[in-house]
Image (tube, rainbow, N blue to C red; front, side, top):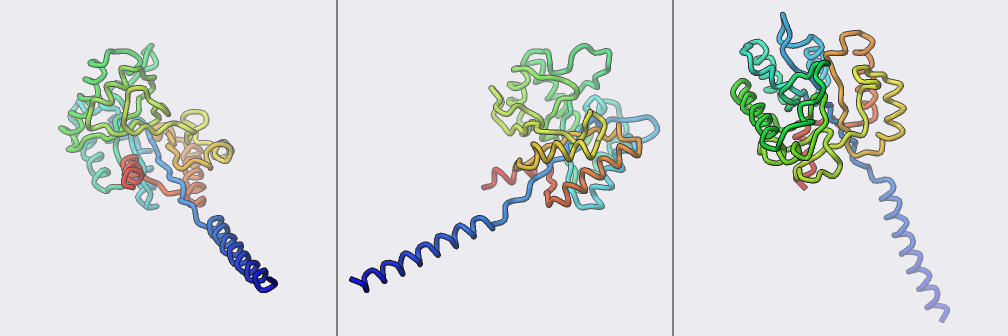
Length: 263
């Protein structure tokens, strides 16, 4: 009887030791790094240069640091022929670090009472998306795989139209649970800027630590043409360096979609 009890205790000890080892291994197992998608808005032509100088500064920084990002084109800028502008986009795209996406057609002005996608039927909104994709293919040689509206809300018609355009596979800052759109929707948790146009590192850090750090991925919106002041550029620089130090991985929208659908 005593031998049986000793044997039982030995087996129990081995089981507990094995269980504790599994728990310890689980607790110490590395978690996947957070993915960051830089959603940078408002690429368009400007006088005297292909694009606003801040775009080139961002592109150079992305390349020098071996990061990834995405630039949103206001597609009316593709209507008027401008070889320097088109070549700038094509050169950036060919490097594979920056993905261009569809930021609407209309460059909304402060006098416009409504956003581009706050009105219009399914057919009308679908025609807008198709025109943008056609212009990109004709002028740049590639289509735009993601969409994010320029200074505009959206409607049910927008969802249906997006779902009907095969080139578009990702909605940046789309709804968490779309009603009609069945493809990838990356919701907004936080942005680079606070307030809009101003990358404030201390505000970003506080919001990130409160709501962003626990997310598997973050889509971070910013507007480089508004970073012409050195203070604003430094805010962007500090934010990205902070995320790099956290071990975050920077991806394009399509790269991230592929990483979660290839499993």
